[in-house]
Length: 110
Image 1 (cartoon, one colour):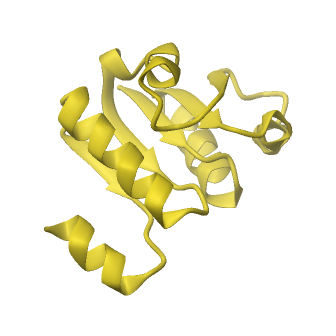
Image 2 (tube, rainbow, N blue to C red):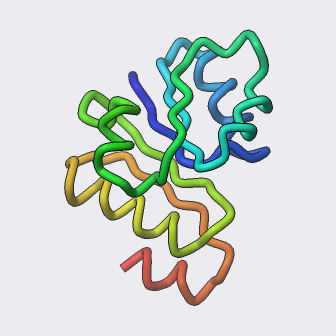
């Protein structure tokens, strides 16, 4: 399965490496190109520099072939928006968004 991950911090990079080791193809999107260093030289997936809720950026990451999307950046609003774009615009059924603020989490669950 192809999986797109927004955010290449500790969670995103670990998730990307783990999923790739399990045999999935992975694309990681981050605004900061230096964040990709966390993936290590052995990472074979795509590294896409851009905003994770931008449709063109998501297309470059292969969202149209993706079976899952994870928004795990440090920003709740960005994660929520990216998750909605993945689900509502691209029809991705398996979507996860990391939300720090419990009040926002309730809104997202609805």
